[in-house]
Length: 92
Image (cartoon, rainbow, N blue to C red; front, top):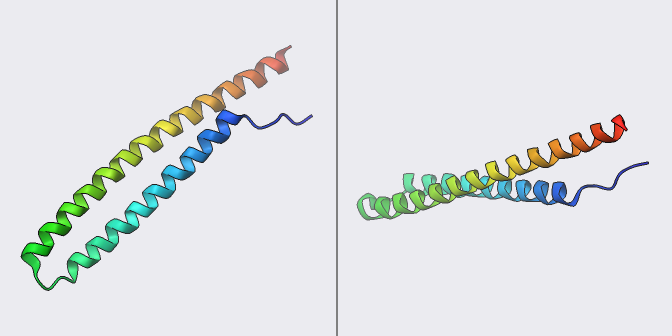
C-alpha cells in the first residue's frame, strides 16, 4: 500500500523550487545588468547607478540563498523523520 505524500515534504519541495527559481532569475538579472554596464556610453553616472542596482540584486540573491538553505534543512529534517517513521513501522 502506497503512503500518501507528506504535505510538509511537498511544501518544502515547493519552497525549494521557488527559491531556486528566484536565484536563477536574480542571476539572469545580474548578468543583464552587468552586460548593460559594459555597453554604457556615459560611464561615470550610469556605472554608479548600475553598481548600486547590482549590489541590491546581490543582497537579494544572498537572502534567497539563505532561504534556500533553510528550506533544504527543513526538507532534510522532514525526510529524516519520514525515514525514522518507516524504520519504526518496519520494526513493529
